[in-house]
Amino acid sequence: MPAAMLPYACVLVLLGAHTAETVAGRGHLPWEPRCQQPLPDGAHVTTLLPPRLDGPWVSTGCEVRPGPEFLTRSYTFHPNRLFHAYQFYYEDPSCQKPAHSLLMKGKVRLRRASWVTRGATEADYHLHKVGIVFHSRGALLAVAERLGLSRASQDCARRLPPAGAWLPGAVYELLGAQAEQDCAAALGFTMHELSLVRVQRHLQPQPRAPSRLVEELYLGDIHTDPAERRHYRPTGYQRPLQSALHHSHPCLVCGLVSHADEHHPPVLPPPVALALRLQGRWVSSGCEARPAVLFLTRLFTFHGHNRSWEGHYHHFSDPACQQPTFTVYATGRYTNGTPSAKVRGGTELVFEVTRAHVTPMDQVTTAMLNFSKPGSCGGPGAWSMGTERDVTATNGCMPLGIRLPHVEYELFKMEQDPRGQSLLFIGQRPTDGSSPDTPEKRPTSFQAPLVLCDEMAQDFPILLPHRPLLGKPPSGGGPRPPVAPLPFLLLVLGLAFLGWL
Ligand SMILES: *[C@@H]1O[C@H](CO)[C@@H](O)[C@H](O)[C@H]1NC(C)=O
Ligand SMILES: *[C@@H]1O[C@H](CO)[C@@H](O)[C@H](O)[C@H]1NC(C)=O
Image 1 (tube, rainbow, N blue to C red):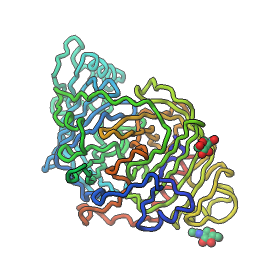
Image 2 (cartoon, helix red, strand yellow):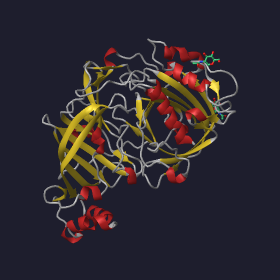
Image 3 (cartoon, rainbow, N blue to C red):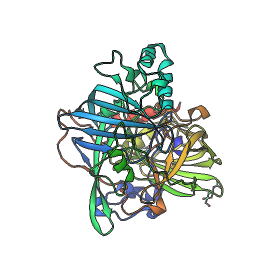
Image 4 (spheres, rainbow, N blue to C red):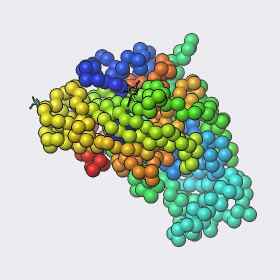
């Protein structure tokens, strides 16, 4: 969607040129008044550096991975670095019909602060064991069929019982002492998500009660192209897990997932079905990180009566979204939605981007735009920091990877969270930085949800100042990247550029 138009979208809030200074200045949240809420003092997000993984972590809902695959996760890390983890897979997008479960045992070691994804920590992991349990004969057949497709994995398929001999509850080893071959790999399974970690804390205010501590574990993203998954090292995150001990309330799913095991996979309650009603303003609920490393906040407005949309993408150089680099304002039209056949519960739409405005928000971006090829980004004339310019006449802004007009094939979904807040899920961007500009490239999974402005509850942690909780860098960490480093930004912009040509 709109997000689309930018290789990595971003935005926060609508900052017109006249309000841009507010963002650059300290002490004001860059939210447009209608979306702005006085933030309770305790709502600040803190990042634990080095991250502390110990304890049980669980999914807070039914997760969708590219494919699509529907799953819930329950991971437990022990102080001796060993972990055991469950991934429960389902046939349906509401996680109500368990198909099979994977159980993993292994070891994980934190390495150093990531130089690629600021604010993240890199880790190494080793899998000792991977087992699979089938919850139906059909699930066994489906996996056996996948393994039987390639010659390399046919031996793995033979290790599974014939469907007639399926025993409910039996654990089959895919990787471990008894398996000669890594059949987990043959199935396309990896735990590369463990190679990028981040732990965040915030306080969730409670009506008439003390605030609750909420801990979130961000693990590496899953490549949108299944063929790339075995090799891809994450640079962004997937939907966070929450601590089973310190999660937001209420969270029925947290309890179900944390009490589940391979013989008792969690069956989630039926979702509150929401028809897709885009009308209104939708904002990021926090600072979003994208693979290839952009940090951004987004704000979208949908006008249902004339099928037009507006998007504000606010880009930042830091993981707390405190150092703005540039803002893009884009507008266009969108089509009627049709139910997705591939991702049940999702709606397919087509977005068109017809106008765009750019506001450089720091010296580096201003200078870069100043020196860009004439006619490649806006008409003649110099750029100055904080001043918005229309780039429609030059068909976008090549140095920032924005090309107009532009069409994107989108996947949307709406849900209600346990607090009754409406959430809007927009399709995940292709990990390779390209845009879903053909129907074949339409997403099959989702980004972090946006929340409806008017419903934004007080306790939603929006764009909060981040501070490391412990001042010291992770052990073994080298020098941390400087704040808003020039080469870094150019790298980001360069990548965006390539992604769009
Ligand atoms: C659609 O309506 C909105 C609000 O009424 C207006 O701001 C916008 O310019 C309109 N867009 C188009 C393309 O007509
Ligand atoms: C951009 O160009 C204008 C005019 O040449 C100049 O005044 C301004 O300082 C430049 N800004 C940057 C950040 O290079």
